[in-house]
Length: 202
Image 1 (cartoon, rainbow, N blue to C red):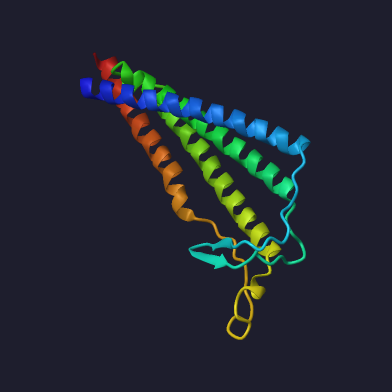
Image 2 (image 1 turned 45 degrees about the vertical axis):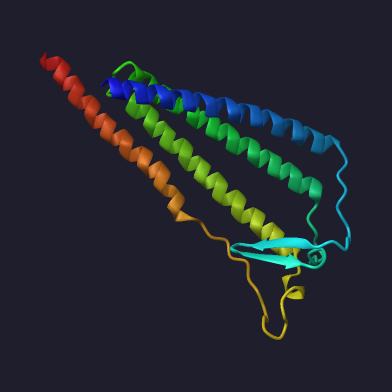
């Protein structure tokens, strides 16, 4: 039991630190968003310096700027969307850290089957599921916007590459995290029921 208390105490400190770090970073991104909305961002044009282009696992080193497809991304819009997505992701993570703190608080006191733990774990599962959805949507939309704004055919050898497609996919592996929290909530709920029956017997 003492080992459980010590471990819960350490994890609780980490959860609090993560929560405050996320809040501070969210505030910084909010300041950045305000600066972007009321500031003036100019898009870079035709420099002769090289450019690095990342296409998933492939990284290309170009001799000049990446060729556009006639519909270049507005840098102000990209910066605004990126800042909003970062704020949402960080605040969701801060919310998750706060719920984790509520899970660990009874464990610090030696009550691993407190009646609130299973509910908080279930809530943590929903929060992590929201994070997975946000990350997947933002990643897919961001990649689609970038790829459709580039003229990739100008980069590759036209005699070898005749066409390209942009595929949006959902990474199902990320669902393991919320599923793990839901399973833990069911396990703890069963433990809470056994603890309640034991208390009634005594």
